[in-house]
Amino acid sequence: MLLIRCPYCEEERPELEFRNAGEAHIARPTNIAAESDDDFEKFFFIRANPKGVIYERWRHIHGCARFFNAVRDTVTDKFVMTYKAGEPKPAKLPGAPK
Amino acid sequence: MAKAAAKTKAAAASASVERRPALAGRTLSAPGVKVEMLPPAERISLRAPQASLAALSKALGVTLPAKPKSSATKDGRTALWLGPDEWMIIDEAGTDPLADCAKVTALHSAVGISHRNVGISVAGPAAAVTVNSGCPQDLSLEAFPVGAASRTILGKSEIVLLRTAADAFRVECWRSFSDYVFTLLSEAAGDAAN
Image (cartoon, rainbow over all chains, first blue to last red; front, side, top):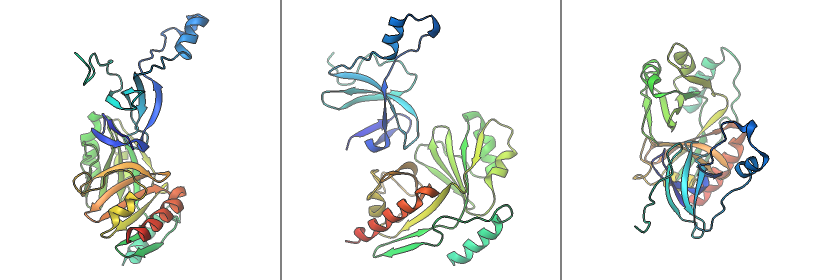
């Protein structure tokens, strides 16, 4: 079982308490009615789906119930780091080459 | 003894409606662990911002814990940290914490959930093994000391787990899940002895 660090509970918890909530850092357009169909499609449907490091929203649903962001490697399934919702994308990941 | 206590509490609660707790009085004894339904208690779900905590703590008579996975108990009333702005208050002394919160003018949301939940006691040397059969958390005394409280899962059901003593837990679950939770714990209690 994976252990995921919840930034609100400040400790690692078993994966069964968590739920994935899609890609992180997708900003909702400020004026969604003025969006062109192409832009709306990009915002609404198109996701990065990378092979490697991905930034995701996760929710500690069976714990503190908070949403937070996690950096995960889709190849190894390893969680690189987690941080609170609303915080900016980390500039440098722990363990990344300098 | 437990039955007498249940009767007094039932009498105190009967002012409004007759309370018919799920699985009332059910117990299971296995070598090393005893699983039993706890008598009814008053409970509220409390959400409040940082600024209201002092006033709410004063009104409730118990300091709302700020540390994750912790709880505070005073005079039969326990406040469990569930989230950064969320607590569950369990009152076993028969006084309604909802009434205490109603007097507080500071911003908060208090919802009575006395009848939504039931409490199950899991006690004995094999209590941690029994709960661990369905709960994936580390329940060693270092990681989950006495007084530690957490919302977590037990099998397929969400529970709130509180360690009341080194070898005793209080499992809180929704009453509609209580049959599942009690049965799972009963099966686990039988296995825990082996």
